[in-house]
Length: 150
Image (cartoon, rainbow, N blue to C red; front, side, top):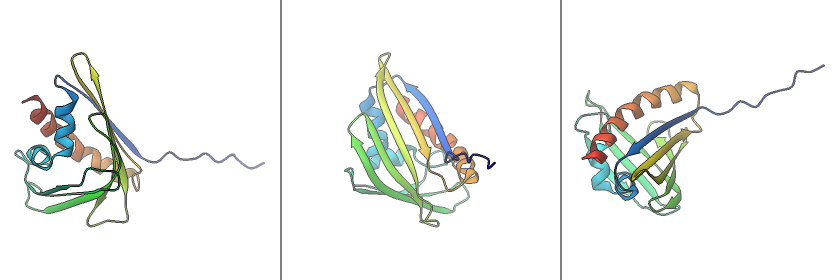
């Protein structure tokens, strides 16, 4: 008798935050180039060198930044879902590995006089890619937290 095959779930990373601000402020942090430049990246302060956003379904986005060691990184994608102040879904691919496309989903909801943010990064190439991104997002979210709460 053959063993039943189990479908492996793709690697997934989920982060939840609650901010004592309106969803609009968190939305703007993700969708306005000037705001994104204030928090996106690993440095403190972040070193974004380019932030381009065409905020519409099918629109492209691109961000370039320096690591603390001076290395230049560039990531880009295409918006798949745009529901102002509520939901944003987009593809994510590093310039150096454009064939490894993952997906980010951000859901915002009003709660307790503030805003809940549910962030999911999924469809990673493999588990190691998820682990690598988890470390990066941990730092990026510290910057986002400071930006949103100021």
